[in-house]
Image (cartoon, rainbow, N blue to C red):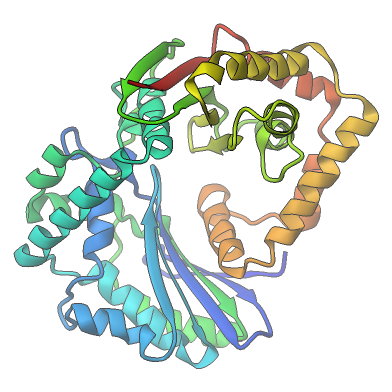
Length: 408
């Protein structure tokens, strides 16, 4: 893959992906997320992400928000269990403006009390909104089931109690402990030469002092499957079935990404969609997801259906999982699954911002970025015996947990 990397003395790395387009994209990935929060401080990483847009030592909220919008740019951010990401899109001449804004909000935000109070109310509304969406709520609750008592089980948004408790000291302590300069990647996608990238990066970010605290992440404890049912004031049943899964460094990661895509991934031709929606028409949405993380992963199947059809839907899901455990994929089936997955990945490169974020995360996680050819070679190397081994490991009935929300 055509990219260049420059590392500054403070440890911050800059990844540049050249492109002849007049539209540029940039992102900054910080290896700090909700799993890095102290106990009782659920939601702090996400809270900080919100406050980064409020006030710095030299800009107020309007100046931050207008810095790119006044030149037609777009600025946004999100938080996950392990990352914080800020990203922007803009016309080619405005790279320095964008990088300067990133440096300002990430390293010079002042977190004023009045803005903290307002943003707490915003996030309380966001929490309430998610609780009104059972398809969102059940996935959050299911992760808590998989990682009970562990930071990975906590809701990224936090709880009303934890959000109300946040102080400015909490914010600065989290920032100092988790915004490691050697675990920050700046991604740039655009029509620039490397000299320009290095000059601007050094001018803007080299003045940041190195911050290299020891990384402290709680290890994953042993897991045992559970099956929970709740009644809620909702109109249909919602169900999640899944398991703790392989980490991003596991030898089976690529193969399981392929298996997940075959089972219930993107598109209408997944096995779960064809069997449960198209053949029996008992679920509008049914999908599976696999999210690898640094030391573990999450696999889940989600569907929503009428309460009287839940049992049948579960049996159909179990049937598809059993087929993968008991029947090797034939050569044609395996090739079709690979061709579909490879095609989806290739088409995904058209999403330039998504590609840049993916590349930046890869550099952060692995120290390198695989080319498409290397990625495709890993997919094509997957065997039907490997698929069978993974299915018997991940889909073993005694390892699968489930959670159901039923209407009252």
